[in-house]
Image (cartoon, rainbow, N blue to C red; front, side):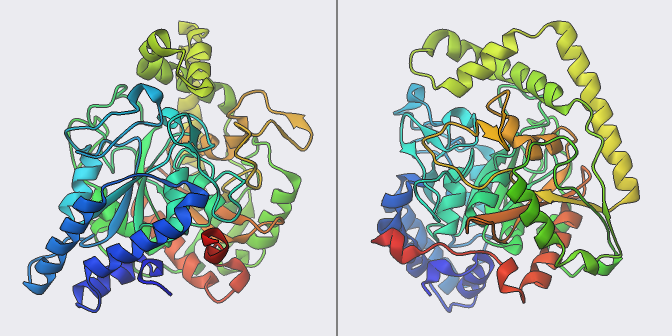
Length: 476
């Protein structure tokens, strides 16, 4: 096993005890990128010279006995939707093909402040629109378990890079499932926190609680470490509040036998491939019995599809209408589609969607009075070819929009929950399979602890643990 294959928490521990050097760890990551990135195209821009200089400084700090940050010496990948000072940031768009920011986004500067080595940018669809990581700047990212298939999106580059050991941790963002679906497709862990836990100041649509910054890691402890490094308070984000200090502490034990859990194979509204339903139910049958109570129950999400399409369309108008107006000749189809459909809605439609979302939120909050957690599949299908822009049909039913196959994730988004996507082995095609573990808005620490406890419980079952890609095959 190479150093880059160790879990991030273990890497950080060994750096702190001087068992390994940040320089050695960085070189291990660079060797892995050189070996396999050509097949998966997860890492798209790099700052090797600066990262090596940072690694030497990090090594000196350890030897000098300095105080070390949470991410000290860890190579980190930053999703290409986040600005990185001095490092090319394209947002996956030809409009910004040669853009090099002068300042970091807050999440990036927070990671740097905690000692992260900002090594690389990870690929994303244009402006994060769509769950297939491909764009006109860098091309498509392949799934590490089969590079002809997609890692999903929009944090697909981060998920693929983590699965291959190219970086120790990676950033990501989530609206309709952009952290969760790639985690499920690539066999890693993704965490969607409550709005404002990772502040995003100065964004184009400030009053948008559906889009959040989060983190990705290979394990629950890893992603918890990433969230601890990224969380802060900043009034530039209207949803930011005082930092939950419990998020800064290592995860502790939680008694699974004390929890009441609802299981839902489709949230009562999402199209789900019949084989995925079967896989989900078979996997859940191996651990349902550990909980105090396990019930089959769907949340009441009402007309969540229409409410999601309208609110998403309006937010896209605010963020991208001028780009569509001025650059439609070089924009991809997803951004144009969202803005175009958004402009067709009336003020009455928007008012209805906001009211409907409020009802959905309250329904789900009411459900969490009766249960502690909700568990459902992360994705509705097995990974598909990245040549396809999206899933066009499920079980013979044509999808009405390019987003409908993501209803398992965006259905939850509309209730503003906390969600951890946890890998639990492989599906019927031998590809990674994940489950979503959801709790109510504000339950970040609780959901992480529950996911951590379940991960540890499943560790003794090889068929239920995190799958690993064939690195030798990728390298060849």
